[in-house]
Length: 327
Image 1 (cartoon, rainbow, N blue to C red):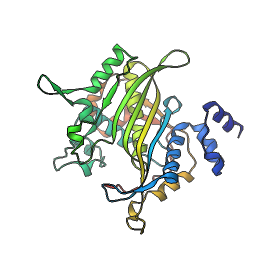
Image 2 (cartoon, rainbow, N blue to C red):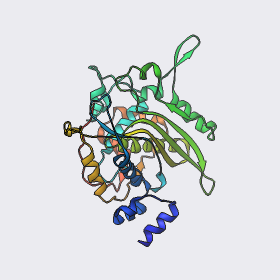
Image 3 (cartoon, rainbow, N blue to C red):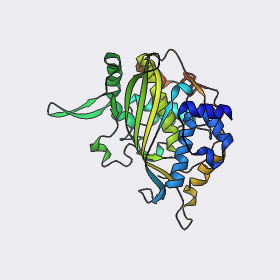
Image 4 (spheres, rainbow, N blue to C red):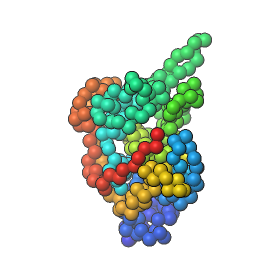
């Protein structure tokens, strides 16, 4: 317990988890870092404070407004340990995003099916994040042009790392206002700070308008942590803080009369709260991935080759918990 209190004192943590009686889990949260704690605290807050809301899916949610947290990537890679998360899905999805492609052929090639419900018959997803990251529509010279936000931000990080304009937006009103599924994670902003020795740290803040706590948030945390690690590497810096703002954080739940219970995420989330967090893994990226151009060959590579470039060491999570997607 002395180690727990000392870790808590150093971090400035004043969270509520000690007085709910989970001392053993709390000690592990202090030792294993803030990543799991941030997620589990979010789960507790939505379950404790969320109010029932109807939405476009027809499945009710328990909803809260404006949750914020920070995760320090120097303390381990923030892949959830209270249930198993598919690392392959995270890697492949973010390669797809960074490619700028709108077709899910790459995802299907690697057996990733989670974008299937939002693709048309030809496999196209007009609202794909990468499409707007790499081809954001703008008015130019009386016509319509496109800006590669990723290329600009990476170049600006080299030219002017202290810039406060390192913004990447996925929200293009011409698409989002009429889309079947407009972007949930609306924008991310990069920011360089200095550590105690004066060395630069690259940080990333994600603003997310719609946040599925059970299914989406664990993937969002790990996915943007991977983006941050890559951008830091390509900019010659160390990855620092991943910060996350959840606008509408929600948990899908059964109707008051008990119907739609197959979509109820509450029992699975409560099960996670009973599990003791485990040590965070360590991410090792192949040293040959020195620029965004080095990702190009991976788009045609086998799953085994792709995953050999992004190795998670020491990932030993609890068993997976199944949650049904509300489409």
